Length: 118
Image (tube, rainbow, N blue to C red; front, side, top):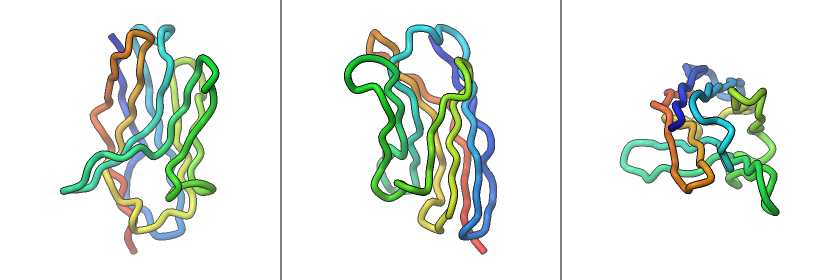
């Protein structure tokens, strides 16, 4: 079992920056992938940024809409962050941290609201 707790969401003006954090606890040494999804009302949850930590696909990946603006990083074994720059109104969403373990289980955080508005 893995528990995830996000923080760092809030209200920011267009063009501004926010840094989201996700603290992981539990069985964190059996994880293969982690990252961030976002969701707006009436839409499916979409992958924003991911980090694969094992195997031939090791590395990071991003949605086209955030490439060059968002950066995912693993601060330490317990913490993953998402640096979001040049924010746009369309980035407004609830952002969810996730992680996958080696058994194929996916765990989610509770979500944090990001609102980009003037």
